[in-house]
Image: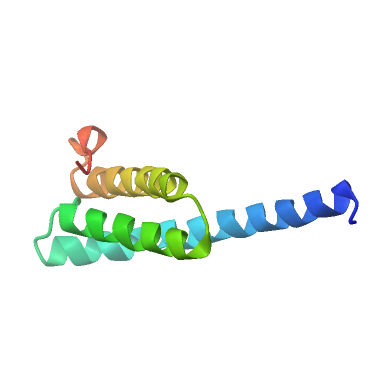
Length: 100
């Protein structure tokens, strides 16, 4: 049996990986905004939101991870990303945007 301190070190490393992945995801924001602006797309595309949620919940299901947990996490990520996109694309209206 491993020591709890060793297990916690591994958990901390995973947490750092999660944060690094979130940073990579959010670093794509300027490219997403530029594409949407150049192509006349709105900050929030409900079909894409549904697609991301469904795809990640399916992955959770096959990975033995709670679908509700993954849904809630991705809903928060998507909401935050959409608000950031809207704030850049519509500086005066961005704070009121919501992907629903």
